Image 1 (cartoon, rainbow, N blue to C red):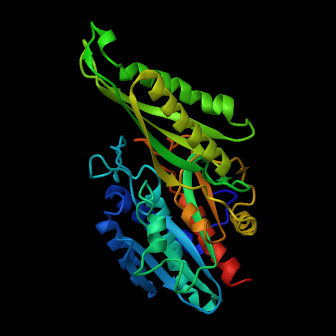
Image 2: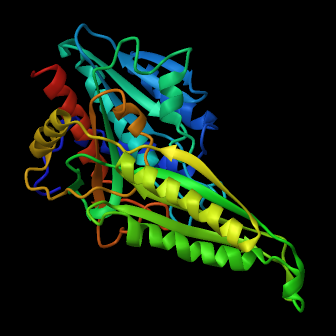
Image 3: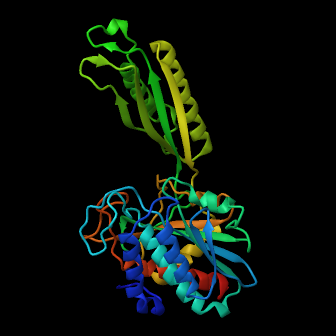
Length: 392
């Protein structure tokens, strides 16, 4: 690729990198149920003659090169999404209803092949490397499970000094990066609002307590929180994404349900949104006569990048792609890499993979990447280890 300094060993391994990614893509597995993926990752790592720990948080795999000195953790997630693929390629998913629509197949392949190059020069290392292959990033908080697994806590033995992660994206052209000054993801919660009234015939609404009317008012009131109560200097979202209720044209239902998501960055904004949602639900229940129950499903905190680790990432990436463009806004995505950066300094960035031919967004049935981008990501891993543990 023009203008990119790809590690020469990785150029030689490009066909292997592509083969690995396409194999993972063709056989997607979900959440913690990753028997084939985990086995393939562990077998590959063993061919490199490095220590392998399996079954971390059920299906996570960790490769370890132990050396005196600091230890850095490099993370790739392995799970796919419950999405039916809408692409016809030689590597199209063989499992209907499952697809690697978030690039985790590429993350896993990049880290495996980078591990191969790093392991070949392990005698030069002045510290340890953990290659962390994580399950259940897509809503299962596999990062936290790996951190807390009593059989092998991934941030211990040896103790991790810094953590790093990459995520591919088609929001940027191939080779550009998304790296904010602080937050690389947001606080993400899901919510469910259950509304119970009194059902009856549509011709006698005065004998009913209509949960649909209450729900409709609730949806409108929830939109006021960000628009009129959150300081505009803060980013926040309250999005209603599902409204279920009723079955017949001529019957007022007894209950309905609203679902959605809240997203923000700062703790004080989260507390404001949570409290106002609860107050609105309580008030709407009192005024309508319905029972209104608000349930929060807590997911992820924001990824908070460490300034020193950001600089190490930029220095490393600049050596690979000297003319890259950098997006610095805060992405409003959820990512459980935040569990790592809550306890260790680290840096997470998004690697652009888009071309004119391949530009479908993450989490879509058409998502695919230009596989040359994996050479950039794998080169970053190798160069980062060299900078931190060989040339430091």
